[in-house]
Length: 277
Image (cartoon, rainbow, N blue to C red; front, side):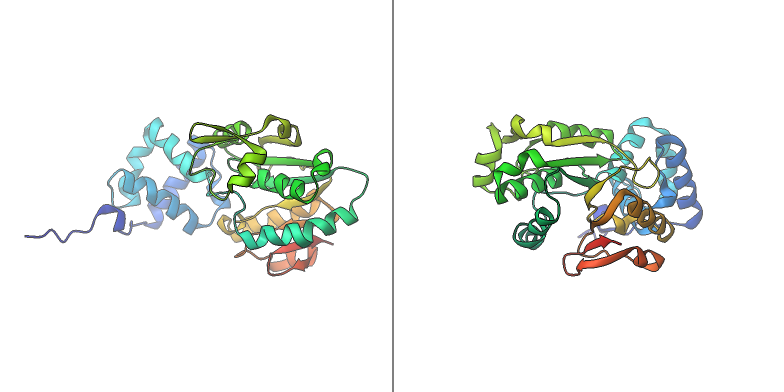
């Protein structure tokens, strides 16, 4: 007779308030993950991955597993690593190459352009930024400085290495690979001659010291994970990071809400590009 019990991957995990609150405390104390900054839906999604991986059905059942250092490390990876790819959302990058970056070059002359990729993950967005500028004019290499930051040291080491397998190179054409990467077996490696355009280091955009004189801040597809209170603090921090008339770029599903709307004006609503007042 057929077994009608659904596989664990399809089961909805049970989260009671008390257990979730306790798990938040554990991950803050043991892996220094500031869970209060993030909304509960994000935390539940990421926790569910590890709960299911251990063939469990509830957050309460998962609590004893958090006394195992290996499981804590796996959970930390799951909480801090975000999906990324080269040239994610092609219409956005087309707009950058045809309009936005050209406007930036007109407005910023005779000095370096400081660009920050916050939550840079394994570096695909930061590299996409440089390639887009170089495709406009290869002479721009000496004018573009890109800062890549993340809260995960492990993922930052991958960004610095800039080595990508078949999954990591998603979004790259053969033409771009041949021009800016070296092939090594099934992997591609970003060419050494472009590495000097980047600085990658750990930084928490909510708590760490301000980075100064930023012209463009890429903060795409990350704001959605934060709590309402954290977002308000975040936007005020970003206001301090940016030069006047500099740009903030969010993801397609993200908008500036609440009092922070008075800090920025819209440059392009479709592509979620804002200007600091």
